[in-house]
Length: 279
Image 1: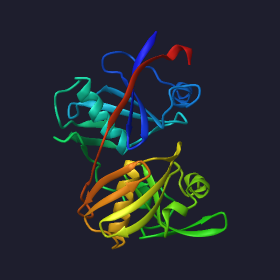
Image 2: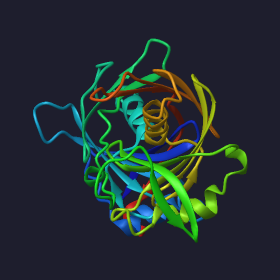
Image 3: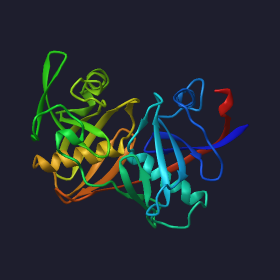
């Protein structure tokens, strides 16, 4: 039986979104892989599942599946699309909602101009919280990648990130080096690899090789992670414009112990239906 879906994107980071609030939707890794396939399926970076909340302190539960079929903890662009989806589908009349994720609660808010702001939570900076194999917290860590020693900063935005500062992000080896960093043995749950170029104290350029996906046009948690790294290293101010291949996000972080705030667009591309039993 065909199941309705909505194709959405946040700055080109694209998603297939299913409503599992009003009807049952069963996803398996094989089904997710097929849905995400850009030739044999719908095509997307991630599949999002909207469910009823398990607890009383949230409005919905939000599950995220990478294109490789693995369920992951958090996705910033997905959180914005999630908020737009439940509002447009009249699953809620609230402009601000509380959403359960594997990484904890997030709080997306739809602004008057249609943009979506998300409280992405407090960054986790201790290596064991990422997780990352290191004895203690440091501003940067030496990471051996194909015989080259890279200086990376490591943190969790609900999902793991390794960020390095580069001179020219357009020429950075994102595809080749990012793939190696993603599966580096010091990251037991793999990692998202960010490549950040600082333009000035209020503007960076960023490319991200996402865990289980590859390079995407935008990564919301990656943008948050990069700004946190830039702030901790004294390179950035509290509010930063992050220019990704798909467009710009506004990120604000007031410092340690404080949540990161992300603002950006979320758009619907088209509606469709797919027979999951045939996948």
